[in-house]
Amino acid sequence: MLEPGDTGAAVVALRDRLMRMGYLRATATASYDRAMEAAVQAFQLAHGLEADGRAGESTIAEVNVGPEARLKSVIVALERERWLDFDRSARHIWVNLPDFRAKIIEDGRTVFDTRVVIGKNVPDQRSPEFSDEMDHMVINPSWGVPRSIIVNEYLPLLQQNPNAVGHLQVIDGRGRVVPRGSVDFAAYSARSFPYGLRQPPSDGNALGLVKFMFPNPYNIYLHDTPSKSLFANEVRAYSHGCIRVADPFDLAHALLALQSADPEAEFQADLDTGKETRVDLVKSVPVHLVYFTAYPDAKGHIGYRRDVYGRDAKLFEALEAAGVVLAGVQG
Image (cartoon, rainbow, N blue to C red; front, side, top):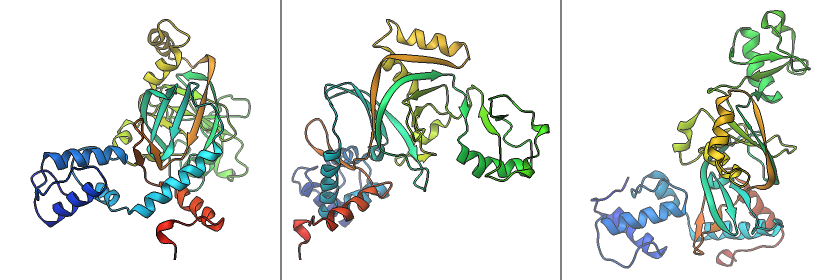
C-alpha cells in the first residue's frame, strides 16, 4: 500500500508511471503528495476502482497492466461495437457487465447510474450478453426459484431435513402450496423432483422489493436485493446470473417518470400494499447487457475494466486466428 506521505523508490516508480500514462503532470517530487493522490484517484475512476487516492493491491495491479494488453482491450471493444446495431440516441438501459453498473441513457447522456451485482464467474451463472425490451416491473415480487438452484442447492438440503430453507414454499405444477409433511423428498432425484419452490413477497425476499422484467430466453432480469453489503466491493460478481441493482427504487422512479405525474408516490402506494403488483410500462425500454472492458467517457478518454469472465481473452484469440496482429508484438 502506497499512500499520501510515503516516500521512496516505489513512490518514484508510481509517479513516473502516472506521468507516462498522462494522469500526472511532470514533477520531480519523490513524495506521495496531494498532486499524486489526485492522479491516483483519476486513475482509479478510469479503471473502476475505489477512488480513495491510495495505491493498494488492486490499483497497483491495474497500473502494471502494460500498453499491449490495453490495446488488446481496445481492439476487442471495436470488434464488439461491430456487433451492435441499434439506435443509441433512443432512451435505453445499458448494463456493462465488467463495469458493474447499469445506466439509463438518453440522447447520449447518462440520466441515471447505479452499481450492480452480476453473475458469478462460474459455469452456468455468468450473466449473458443480449438485448431485449423492458415492458413491466413487479413490486413486492415473489421469487420462483430456478430449477437449477432447486435441484443443485435446495433439494439436497431438503432430503437431509424436510424443514430446511423454511422461507420457501413447496408448490405443485399448478402453483398450489404443498404441505412439506406430505412430501418424501428422499424419494426423488434431481431429474424426478416434481415440485417447485417459491419465496413469497417480503423484505427478505431474494429479489428484494421490486424486479424489472424484459422477457428473454435466459430468464435474466434486474432486481432489488436484501444483500446490500456486496455493492461496496470493487468486483461484484455474486449472483446466479440476474442483475442486482443498488438503487432499485430510484430506477423504478426514473422509469415511471415518463407515465406518472408523481412516480415516487405511485410506486410507494403499490409497495405499501405488500401484495405482488405488476406495473406495465406505457412505453417499453430497450435493455442492453454488454461486455466492454475498454470504452470512452464523455470527453473521449478511454477507461478500462477487468476481464471478469475472460471473454475478451477468448475473443482476442479468435481475432488472432483470423489474422489480427498487434503492431507492438509483430515478430
